[in-house]
Image (cartoon, rainbow, N blue to C red):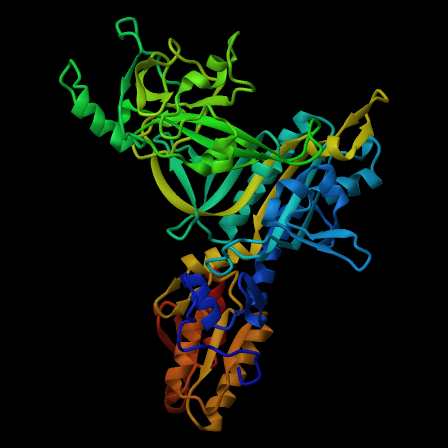
Length: 599
C-alpha cells in the first residue's frame, strides 16, 4: 500500500447519494470525472475485470464468440432503423470536421446486424451468437446513484442469429439461463420479471432486477410468484356491467368543476343520488389529452405529432411511463396550449367522449379529423360515468361505456396500486423497487428487415434472419454488489470478486514485524492468492485497520505485537467473525483453506 495508486477518504463525498457511490469513492475504487462519468482506479478495475471474467465464461460456455465494436459510430445504420430519431435527446450526436454525423453508441444492434450481413450469406453459417463488453453512452438528463445511472457505462451485449423463430426461442432460453448463472455466481439477488421491449423493438422481453430501495424500476409480484415490470402489467379484462336499468344520459350544469375533486363536490351539492350514496372520484371519468411524438415512418418523412385523448377513472392517476410503453417507439407528453387550440372541440375542463373517436366519425359530424379516443383498461363495458359534456360548465351524467360512447381502443394508462389483481388472476399484486441489471429480448425480424440481413435457406430461398438481443449492465452490476455487500465500516466483497483474497496488515515499528508480514505475503502469493499488503511504516494501526475494513477483502491477517511475543498471527474474516491466532508458519495454509471455503 506504500506504492499502490490509492487514497482512501475519511469522509463521504458530498454528492454521493447512495451507499455504493459513497463507499466506492471512499475506498479508492472510482473517482468522479464529471456528472455520470467515472474514472476506474486499480482496485475498481480489478473487481470489474473479475465480473467480466464470470460473464465471459458463461457466455463462451453457450457458444458465444466475443467481438469488439467502436463506440463512435456513423449515423446511417441508426437512421435506417429510425433509432437516430427515436432516441431523441438520449444519445450523444456529433459531427466530424467534414460535417458527417456520428453518435456515441447507446447500444449496438445495428452494428452486429451489419457485421453478420457482411460475413454470412447461407443457412449453413447459422446459428451464431456474438457478444461484446463495451462502453456505452446515453445523455441522461439527471445522472444519479453513482454507477447505477451514468452517462458512460459498461455493458455486455450479446446477439443471437438464427434461421427461424424456433431457433430464436432456443437461443433466448440459453442466454436467459446463462444470465441466471452469472448473477448467482456474482452473489447478486435478482428477480426475473416480464417487461416491455421499448425502443429495442421485438415481441418478448424479460428483465433481471436486483431488489433494493434505491431502484428506479417498480415491479409487481403475484401470489403465484410471477413478476412484472409495472410498464408490462396488463389489467385482467373487466367483467361487463348490466346497464339495462341505467337511466338515459343527461347533461347537467356543473359550474366551476374543471377538476375531479370539484366535480365530486358540485355533484354532491347539486345532484344528490337517489340511492343516498355520496358521489366519489370513482364515479368520474376524466379525459386526459396527450401528445404523441412519432418518429418518421413510411408515411411521414419527418417526426410528427399526434394529439390523443385517454379516458380513465377519476380515482386513478395517469402513469406516463406505462402509457408511453403503449405507444413505443413513440414518446408522449402532456398536450400543450397549442395542441388544445388546434382542436376547438376540446373544452378545457369539460372534455367528453361525444366529440372524440367513433362518436365524432359518424356521418354528418362537423368535426374534421376527429382525435383518437382511448380508454383505460379499468373502464368496463356497461359502466356509468359522470364526465365532460363538451360545453363550458356542463357535464354528462349516466354516460355508459358501450351504450352512449365507444373508443378506438384500450390502453394501460393508470398507476397500478396495492390490491390490483395480477394478470394471471392468482391474487392481488404487491410491489417492490429494483435496479435493472440485465434484460433479454426476442427481437425477431425488426433489424434484419431494416438492414437487409438475409441468407439463402435450404431451398435456395432468400429469407431474413431471426435475432435475439441480450444485455447486462456490467458497471451497474458492480455498483449493485457494493450496494448489497457492505456494512457501516466499508465494503465486504464476495470472495470471488474481491480485489484480493487477504489483506495483510503489519503493525509496529520493528523490522521483525515487517519481515514476518512479507514472509506471509510471499507464502500466500506462492499459493496463487492475491494479497493487499499494508506495509506503510508511519501509519497508525487504527488507520490501517479502518482501511482494511473499508477496502473489503474477505480475510484480514494482522502481523504485530503477538508475532513479536509468541510468533502468532491474528486472522479473521472481514466481518469480524472467526478470529483466531495461529502460528506464523501455519498462517498461510489456514488462510488458503478459509478462502477456498468461501468460494
